[in-house]
Amino acid sequence: MLDQTLTEQAAALRRGDYSATELTAAYLARIDARDNALNAFVTVTAEAAIQAAAAADAALASGCAGPLAGIPIAHKDIFCTDGVRTSCASRMLDNFIAPYDATVVERLAAAGAVMLGKTNMDEFAMGSSNETSFYGPVRNPWDLDRVPGGSSGGSAAAVAAGLCSAATGTDTGGSIRQPAALTGICGLKPTYGRVSRYGMVAFASSLDQAGPMARSAADMALLLQAMAGFDPRDSTSIDRPVPDYAAALEQPLTGLRVGLPAEYFNAGLDAAMGDAVRAALTELERLGAQLVDIRLPHTALSVPTYYVVAPAEASSNLARYDGVRYGYRAQNPVDLTDLYKRSRSEGFGAEVKRRILVGTYVLSAGYYDAYYLKAQRVRRLIREDFLTAFGQVDVIAAPTTPQPAFRLGEKQHDPVAMYLSDIYTIAANLAGLPALSVPCGLVQGLPVGLQLIGRDFDEARLLNVAHRYQQATDWHTRRAPGA
Image (tube, rainbow, N blue to C red; front, top):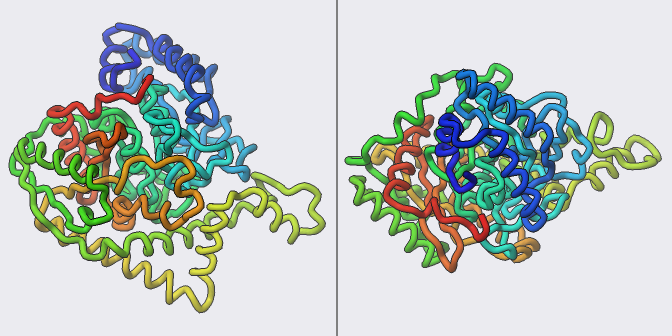
């Protein structure tokens, strides 16, 4: 049963092939056996999971079960969970017990999902390798000496290793898609505003978006169906009807126009990775799609733009952690200034402090216009590039990452090289567009991801393309060793 996808498990639970309690117990046993090597979980909520599974079994027996009844999932430790630690993988929040559930957590629970625990991540979602966590790095199930990507690396590793049916992640500059690609699973970043950010600890408020991570496009459709929708508690939530994502999966791809941006197939792309992505594009063509060459001329400015906008917003959002109200508090401060300084310097890790400093600088008097305001103008140009391209094509296809998973420590002391690992994913966040990654090959035994980017609120189309591709290929069925 652990070899099945979420979609298959949901059907099996309804048939009575096995119980939610049995499925949950099996996953908890696998976490106990395998997670010491992976470090994917920060907190395992075994007792609560068994209780939730029993409730799901009762709901299934009575015929009033939700669409995800009995499905064991994990939540990235950036989502508030009532009565359970929400740490953001930081010393700053190591002792923080959330007093309420995030909307994403609430909605998935209402659909019947069973929470197994909270997954490890880059501290405050700042990182591309899951090496900045206060609790230590997560390891890639395909090769324990390599990174799983970040910042949702714990969620990606947990799904790839078969420690849960699916997991939630957040994507600020690629933090769902990049780890999904590096671990051979599927990950979707919805349109900005499609999924509520209420109860999701903020990093960069104009970029952060929650999304699902699972083994197939069909699985993600079920998860997104439960997660999406207007939330009056989130001022950035969009009041727009949610379509039936599963109903659109089987549409044929005949006549679909797929844009291929030249800027994503340049010299920075590993040659073998490029070959794997081009083979996937050939498969889409065989399924009836038409490949169209396009240009996104401001793509090269995505990384510098992002690393002005995101740190600026992080500087503002993380100002609240001062050692006074909640979170880490320095011991024996001599005065209030000392409390502030030491609580923040001791509570935050090096990467978080680096981004706070950069963000504070670009927002400071004399530099706001030169950096932050100009970055916002470039951001608009990047979005206009996409809008122009979508006048010619229906979706855009590209690599998710420029190379396969790199070794632990390989880029840890070179921030610029680390930042460039998100070069193909950042633009979709700056433009607020939906994007997903699906497995499309292996290079030296490591997974490769195909990225699809869509128009605003066109997640159904992306899921449809990914699903039809997965019906014709088996890359998404390949499992990490021992999974």
